[in-house]
Length: 421
Image 1 (cartoon, rainbow, N blue to C red):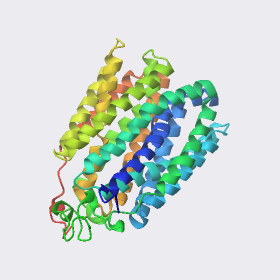
Image 2: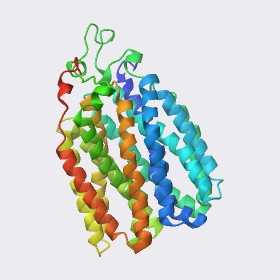
Image 3: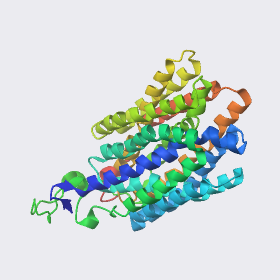
Image 4: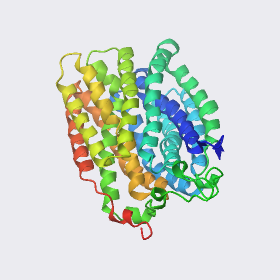
């Protein structure tokens, strides 16, 4: 199906997934740091205990990932998107009513995290990977940039909502938006291009009325077709998993503690939320630029270079005494965070579309533990030292290891022989 016989339906799928990422990323991924201090104060818990909420949600995601990936590869992404967005919306509505730390933990883990993990992490990325091959890095850059757009738009609004209405009312309204916007949109995502008589990237088919008799283009025909078992028997898959774990562990931990880190540096919560929004906004053009380069240049080198900038950001923030470095921190860390689409495009490029959901889900089983340990470590270190300086140095060292790991990545040999892969 082409709209007006001209617009590739994959662009509409990309637009839908981008809307989902804008709302989900702004509320859940970036929004958590806005709720961090109000929740800890309301429930009377330490920063380490508050961090544990985020960390355990990632531990739960580690076990949910392979299941979500299997369902995506078996039934297509739409089912997972619908179920996940409904769960997330219901979870936020229920979360607004809890009055104890244990209840908060249970709702956040059993409902919200399951919903966001299945829909906003696995479902959307698998859908985009299904519809694009040669333009995969750019397409993933667009959809992940939508998370940055949500991070730019929603934290200031959430901060105002928390200030004027309280965190409970703000969370409740967020849940309603998820229920009445993201869930209906998920119905519009098809299983794959082939299910609609199309090919990835909008390539012509023999049945294409505008290009009768034209066969699929060679890049799609030569795409690697690993099974999940074949991919997981390669050294490259586990090497990529390790590098991703190091990257995601630091990035997720820094986002959770972003507002507290800025408060430690002398900013108020509202200003800290604006810095977070600025970083998210910066990430949009940077992600698009890296995605454009990722379809033309070696992806491992691009991600490794971004990680080096992250090292400079974190080490410099630990040493900085003047407020001007807050701007440099946001700029450099924003570039490091923007490498995410190229990371995931690498997975699709190395192993193809056939089992992307399963492969990403198994990777989640590993890399989620980086986001389990990191935030709690940072919170515990701050509680003991009343400083984030040592935390930032440790995170800088981990980012350096990630840079080295990405730089050493090699394309799996079997990828060049799809017929036998």
